[in-house]
Amino acid sequence: MIIEKIDLLRKFLKEKRQSGLSIGLVPTMGYLHEGHLSLIRRAKKENGVVVVSVFVNPSQFAPNEDFDAYPRDIDRDYKLASEAGADIVFHPDTEEMYPPYSNTFVEVGGEMTKVLCGASRPTHFRGVTTVVNMLFNITNPDNAYFGQKDAQQAAIIEKMVRDLHLGIKITVCPIVREASGLAMSSRNKYLSEEEKTQALVLNRSLDMAKRAIVNGQRNSAEIVRMITDRINKESLASIDYVSVCSYPDLIAAEQIETRTLIALAVRFGKTRLIDNIIIE
Ligand code: PAF
Image (tube, rainbow, N blue to C red; front, side, top):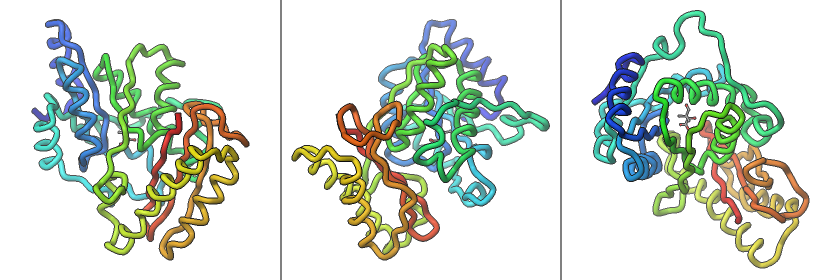
């Protein structure tokens, strides 16, 4: 079933909760791929009712970004989500989520929203935490599911949940890759064949870094240099950042000692791709 209105969704979920079912939420911006479907399947295993939200959230896009061009296909999303185990697809329009004059934001403070993607997208995470908070308030889930591909987003949401005592269990699921190794993303649709081929360098350079660490390399700057050199060999790649930091607090360290995130964002033409690995 697709529900577009907040009060209808609340009414539906209230009845489910009263009959003792737990609620799992999978927030998405739609144009679902295997990465999203893996979250929905996991949610189905762990909850009585699964809600998948499909909402391209304007407040997480800057004016120069791809909000208008972002791929949308609710019929396809509904079919895929239902097959993967969703009971409800929540598909509100912008006015439903942001009524005229709504002007309240939820923002995680400190450095973690300013580094990595936050450096070039300064208002992005404020938009994410605001809409995720709205979705939490609307659905009141027991569990919510996010992908590790957006590792910084997941860490920020976990921090918001802790700071605001939301009492929701956050599960972060592994990155799902195409057979080629390219991390699945709704934005892969924008890539030309040549860009797609060159974008394989992202996963390959992360793998190379992992091997170097396994073989004893502990110097973060050296890891960043190796990845950067490898990516710069691709003619269409333009690096936004390559970063090595602790996870989940996202603090840069000279030496790799604790659980570490190696994350990168690279443009191929107009498409900005992100990828990462977490070294335990
Ligand atoms: O990861 C996404 O698709 C979005 O940032 C999210 C969490 C659905 C919020 O709009």
